[in-house]
Length: 101
Image (cartoon, rainbow, N blue to C red; front, side, top):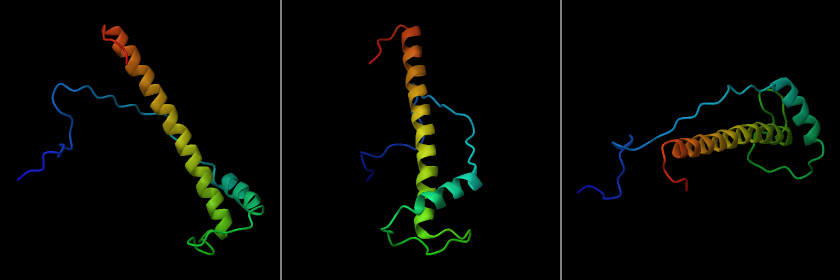
């Protein structure tokens, strides 16, 4: 018996979908690595679970700082795309005569 909550992995007919693709992301890893190393010097309580030294020679605290920096940049870009998608969706709704939610 099929689960009634099952949703197909593709859009249903007569459903509107928007796909927003942003600019390519660029990471200046040498600069980010140096910044992570300098920021990590101020951290005193390392969290266990990270490799003691990575292949690039970063200690645990520097790895966490680098990871956080990259994650924040990705998060900012994703939020920007989400905002753009909402604006485009709202403009499309207004142009087609639909009421915006």
